[in-house]
Length: 235
Length: 278
Image (tube, rainbow over all chains, first blue to last red; front, side, top):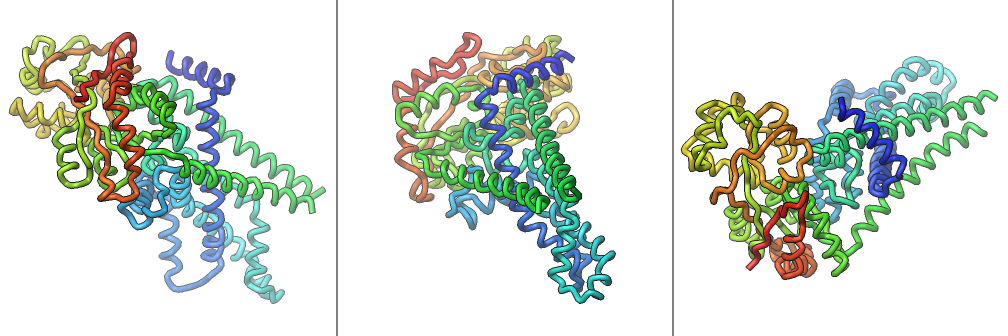
């Protein structure tokens, strides 16, 4: 019980004093995970939308594959990206291992299936509903797709948040490809793992509390933007 | 019109963050820096936090430490993913050099391994006259023992001690012999949690904060010696190795200044590592 009280106190103290190390770690966490969300939306959104409206042989198999990739274990993604970026691997010449860029790549691989699968689900439902109507209007395919995505923009925002939640909370991938290097690749989750291994459970939990507050703030911020957008849309 | 603006704002913000992230990565890559593949025991003890600022101040070379088990550190260095290797498993280190992955191995410092356990000491390890006798007592009493089980330097050492005692604990794997497959700190957390004995290096133990009521039950025997070595990754094998910067780190840590800095590092008034470069 004492650990809990101590953790809350520590967390409060860390935030209140704006501990420079903590600020650095928090900013890197946000940069890495938000970049990964941005890239995975860039890849996953068109991919998911395409699967959602297209009809082709083997489509069900593709859907099953993308859906199961949502459950990719982060440490496996970390290993794959490590082997690819290692100096003994095919992309070693890029010299990206143990850098924030490597962490962004790993998290992008991790959450792109989430964005693609959820987008597919949303777009497919809209397509089932409106496909005939749009066809009767002789609307071209790409215009219909654009209409679906615009109509579903708020749902897609939630898709992005789901990806962000997964990215910012995972430790398995970034610790392998980033190496948890102080002042270079240390993020919230790897710092928590490190403090746990040092036996400083109170500090580890305090960092965990800070991480949860950050996730909460990002979600609240997006919610607020969404609220503003909805209000102005119907004003 | 306005709702478009709001939408653009979201994506604009996301793009700015993405760009920032990529730029940070590029900026860091251009600094003069080396990667040291090392062990959790040296990093968790806080030794690098003490040493590296002194070295960085003097040379301007940034040292990035990747702290993993010795087995993984050697593997990463063999792949060329590091410039310097600083670990503690002499036979594996010598093989690393013999295979051409490393230039030459130097002794840096030592500390020692200890056994920790619950104060009640159910197997009576405190009365043992030797390490082998202690292990026989643990196996005889089938007292829980938490092993690293991760091919690290500490794990390799532990296996060699069981071998010397003529016991194969892996037959009891899952019952009293418990292989955590984790780092030193995580294994100690587990040991304290399940009332098991564990072997650890003294540095990690002194700096470890979740000791509970655990005590040192065995220490001071000759075969508990723990030697650390440093090796430059061979630039002939991996041409991109920053040989010059890596060598200056090795020269510094083996020189008077580095050796004194190692001896200076104390926690709770206790010296954690003892320099012994020749």
